[in-house]
Image (cartoon, rainbow over all chains, first blue to last red; front, side, top):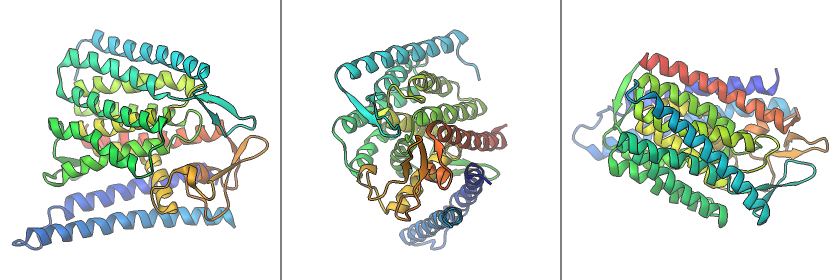
Length: 74
Length: 329
């Protein structure tokens, strides 16, 4: 496979990951009410979960790109 | 969808096309005459290319937007005018006196203020399959970040002759299709100048470039793109269509560990070979960029790389259109 095909595949994977991560954050995490009486704690937990999800997106994409780069560097 | 007469659309297209054409020619002549040029380093014999391409881009869009505001009296258009004017000013300052890696994003926050001031947004995001999600508190904070992110993302995709202008042509078309589906006719009219101005600019920016857009041009295009996505409530479409550029800037930031200007990099992501082909750097310290991914172990000419980036943007535009059809058709 040439580089263009590989990068197209990376873009398609990132598309599905963006949709999944964004849906998880805005549809499931944002409406969460874990601590009903403590709004601040609730907000902190939601921000933390969202942050972890965003970091996982970056991490997964970085791993995929690294795999591609390593195959080319070998 | 068609709330306005066809002659208005034709008028807008003529104004944005003609003014960008005239301003581009004048800017090229003026810059060449006064030595306001930069060297195009992707050529074996370095050629001098005119700077300040932001002037024809901004000029064409601005004039057309003023006319659209006169026709529609829509506050969405006024917001667009203010967002692009603020960004253009920041971009021109950056073109004349290089702003730091952190100063630029911070200054760009001001460009998002008109959207908050006029309240030209719906505090929520629409998702395919899940519908709309209301984000009353977080959304205004996201707006402050979003314009900075889109402006800088467009800036990082300005890598080769014709790349950013070609990329914007394709991405704006996807936005226009989403606006047709959401039946936002005045914002559709407000987006047309971006497509036509940048299409005319592409004629001068394509390989071999006669003019570079500079930060004033790329930041203006990026900020306008972000503003349209927010005002039109088509944020997800905006994110999907920008994916190649988002990945380019994300991996760059990740690999250099922060906001570092490309001029201060220890190892550049690509090298120019003697046959004028570009090859991705094999040194592991080199930042990961789209051009490096496309050329590592596979040297390509500048024209070919540009074609590949445009194919990538066509793919992301197609994904964005499919998403828009799933959501609104």
